Picture 1: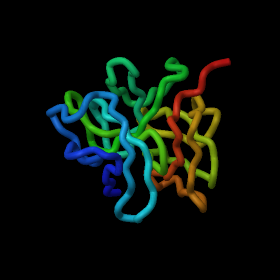
Picture 2: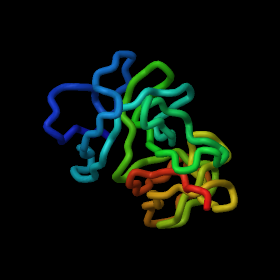
Picture 3: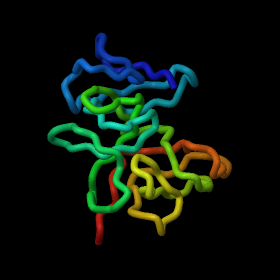
Length: 168
């Protein structure tokens, strides 16, 4: 989806671009809208990339260093903030990650029912739609109107500053 920044922000790096040069202060948050659909918008945070990132990867990030890590396959990072890669923003590169709005996220090979909760997958950087596989994701629900087939590699998710569920 081609997003355009809607905040009063002149120039800068496109939402779908990755760069070896830091073009914004790390942690900058902007609002942008999807110009292809004329509607859907969201918030995006500027972060450092990590190896193996692809468009739609789910990542955690440090609120102090702004370094990303592909979302864990275990639940050792309780409460960690999550974001969705908008580019193949690999190590030593800079790019935007979605933190609110309708996001397209990579998923494992499992069907996703409409309006279902999501969990960390056994595959780093992906979501899963079955509670028994891992830790829940707070602030995220699938936004599909019909079941997404297991062979489909992504799912549209409504996110609002998602984070890894904290143990009780």
